[in-house]
Length: 423
Image (cartoon, one colour):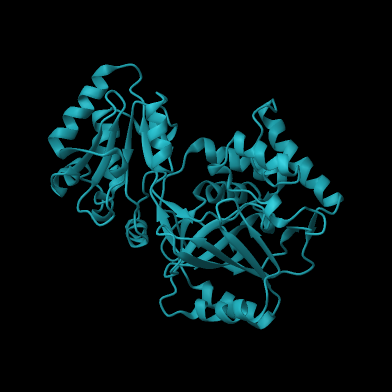
């Protein structure tokens, strides 16, 4: 079972920064140098200065040393302060849903003891990329701090946790709030009532946790904990715990971008396999993302050679079953798994190592981004996917297997900089 503990959080001193909104940032894996520069132009105190390495800083190890130096300077200057006593923290995120209607998602920030994966403890649902794990581990080694949380789901079928959270949200105004550039309002409450803290711990302790976002951070935390077995603080990781039944849970797809590496034969093999195993029809470009309610594996396919958009629907589930004979049924029904088995490793001949290292492969979080990257020649083709519902994510995890990397994108993201957890 998961071990949940309050934490002595490190926070920005709001009287020493322009605002909380000015110093938080999206997680490192959805940030880039352009965003980094824009955020730091607003204030050099933005957490992205420490969380996302500047590629101009060399040699590589100095990037992480720089993050550690920054955090020490911010502590010394009073920009960062540490809570005098442990506490749980509640987060409420208000944001526009996919249909434009307002949604709310609620969760609990806590320290969670790092453990091996398994039933009743913590389960992953996606594969990780080795380079990203190494990056997060080096940052943790240098700073001895969790700069951003792992986002995990827990079952709350009976509503026990939700019932405990409701009165806290309703009783007092938040301790801090920030509106980000995506239009999400993040509101934080510190739970100082020991009785409420104890009740939340008891309600959450026996829950199995499913990692929704932050697989690389959790894997880095596992390795860091093994490196420092004598250090009790190193045995914990910062997590945001959200009920799997929360009505504000939204999952977006992540589209696939591929390069043929100058080999026209790869495109020919891909087209031949698509027409053999899929019903292929030409569609308008604004219809590339498949209908979430469609049947077995519908894909949008944009061919950079002629600019044509296509809908590709798997002819029968038996084709996917034959391509993945050793995998459980839940995995064989997964869009990203079928795409990888039939098209990436099948038609294009990619190895798992090449996929892990993104050799000839990359990802796009929006339809517009994927289309633009094919149109400008950065990639030769794009596959457009539908989102995997939470129930499917849970089913794959409980089957004991991991989805391909970037199979899900939970929205909104949990910002970096709301809370930090010293290790």
